[in-house]
Image (tube, rainbow, N blue to C red; front, side, top):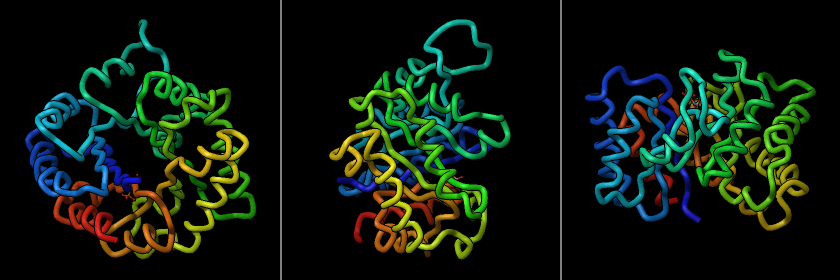
Length: 254
Ligand code: PGA
């Protein structure tokens, strides 16, 4: 299975010119890799142009969105539908990111509705879960996020699901403050155990589990190797194409 490296550009960069530069630069390396699927998730406003660049003979780069609305159509001012994303060439969508949960009050119920709509419409869902702090309840918290996020979603839709373990305390820090590969390894086992009754034996083994939170060129190998994850969600460092390309190459050659 290919490693999945997701670039979460968040609310950057400020212009389409810069977005194209980072994208084209990343694409040059990403297209040469055979064992890595690179997923660039820019702000909505750049999806159209970047989606277009993907369709021009791109092999291993995909574009994805950072959100989608749960209704497929109707009067919802400011929202973006799954069909809009698909028509622009997006194949992935990040859902449940902690910044949306915290800043926009996205609840488990909203995340669940979005996941359901996206999976029903054949988008691959990059579903983020993670605790605010590592207290005595954190494992229960993560279990609950997964169960609520996947509530009433039929098993046969879950083969387009990807789970990212992204502890909130590890986001936006220095690389040394990220989680440890040892803990991420344990978390992968734990997440698969939660998935077992929801997804069945085969899928619970096969759903990719990624790590996110201050991933950089120094710590990425540890997560991929000792952490045993099937990919990474990279925030700030994905906007630095030089460093991001190094991360992609490490993922290709481990
Ligand atoms: P970071 O962001 O890599 O800048 O910590 C990760 C994320 O929030 O997805």
